[in-house]
Amino acid sequence: MTYPPQPGNPSGPPVGPSAGNFGYHPVRAVQVCSWHPDRVTALSCTRCGRPSCPECLQPASVGFHCRACQAESKQNQVVPKTVAGSILGQQPLITYVLIAVNVLVFVITMIQAGGESRLPTSEWLSGGWLVPGLAANGDYWQYITSGFLHLSLIHVALNMLSLYFLGIALERMVGRGRFLAIYVLALLGGSVAVMYLSAEYSATAGASGAIFGLMGALVVTFRRLKFNLRPLAGILVLNIGITVFNNTTISWQGHLGGLLVGAAVGAVMVYLPAKDRTRNQVLACAGIFAVIVLLILIRAAQLS
Image (cartoon, rainbow, N blue to C red):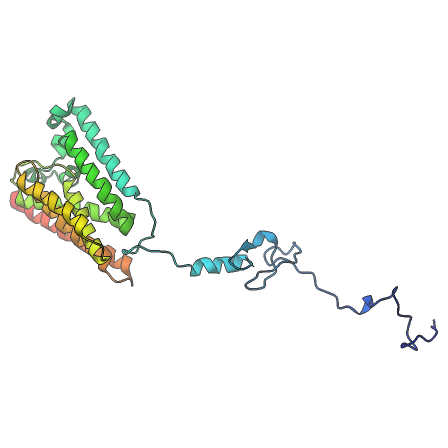
């Protein structure tokens, strides 16, 4: 087939609106999602340019990011930490649990005894409070159980009020696991002091030793953070004063032991360097626990 000569195209086919330039455009490849090859998409990641379907894109500060960029951003995200190395912003769950356990144990002892005035007749109280002579001869549970038993309603109420205010503050600063370690080791520290400094067949009960431990740890933490110590100093002096001037009914031995151990464990939590901090904290707490057990065994041998 031949065509008559055309202006500007003497030998080719006619060029005009009906033909246009369609036959000379490059063919574009079909773009599919990088994670769903069966989905055609015209979208792509703002950050890396990977083709992505709407399901695989999430809004970002600039444009939209694909799944790969989202995962990379999460890995590189800095998680806020407390001074002790735990995740910042945790609710003080352990404090609430400890308060609930103490209150529940007190209610059970009251039911067993048939009233507050008859509390010493409760099996839990008479078998669980710390008597050095009995603990040294086989009643080892008393080192722990004595910290969850109380001798009156006012006793448990004051201790739980102190635990609420001190516990919430400290747990938010150091985290749940570290807070629990401070509490338990301080409780045991108070029991050790009672073993060495109290009469062989005197009975001691209450969470005061552990609470004094929280107070000691808070003082150390406040000092580490360069906070004003005056509010804590006032509370500490008041409690020490009550302990000293009312030592006929209050176990100053348990308070002293709990305070010293709590301060020591608190220092471990907030002063160790960030590198390998969690591992070193675990090792240090294990060492303190080992010393406590050794002191208990030595005293038990002396009283046996």
